[in-house]
Length: 285
Image 1 (cartoon, helix red, strand yellow):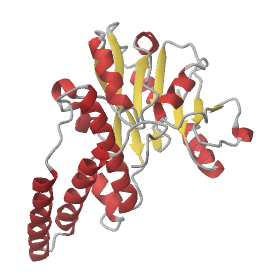
Image 2 (tube, helix red, strand yellow):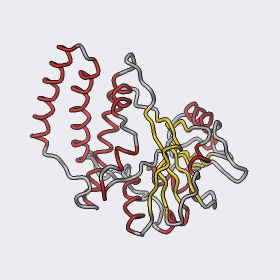
Image 3 (tube, one colour):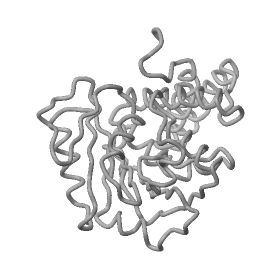
Image 4 (cartoon, one colour):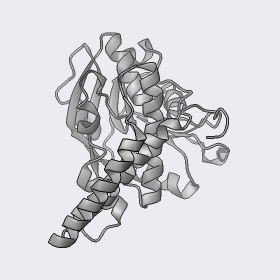
């Protein structure tokens, strides 16, 4: 199991505590890859690998994958809370020989009516569900927030692309498909995703996704076509005004939330296309 991580010592303790709930077999290993720019070497231990040379999830995941030799690699994000039986659930039933990638289930953390707008919006939209990214036909992909990769397939395509900030999961899926490997769903191997706490953090995340979309569409033409910003901006204004009016009339808080957040997140995503997706950054965005 490989978990890329960047953060404080306290956040690292939180990751360790969440992973401690997993039921692991005698030959299973966990590698938390500290990808902080100036990582504290005192954190390194039997379960923590230092990888400060390049701050990308692909670089961190590849360094973690090098630590073991088992047939399967399970990748989790650091902000994921896995169920205790996640590893067993991935292999029930045993994957067919031609399957190279398993898509685990991802749920946004529950958020009641009293939660902050960012968490509530993510929960209602189900933004981290694998359905959101696998629904795009030939350009669908598995989110590596929770997935399992057959090591033979992973190594055959060269692992994750290390020089990009985001979109490495889609890029890997496209290369696996091109090499003839299949993808299967494992919704029972479920993990809970901790949503962004603030609207600001959520919009930064969407802009980062937009940066990845721009890079992917340049490399795989037609995979993530852009929308024209003038038309999109006008749509956003109309969507917000009409949605807020209906929400106020019917006293529906969640409809008001959608009216504001749908345009904001969509615009952040499209504007994000203009941001560089490489590390180190080439010039200033």
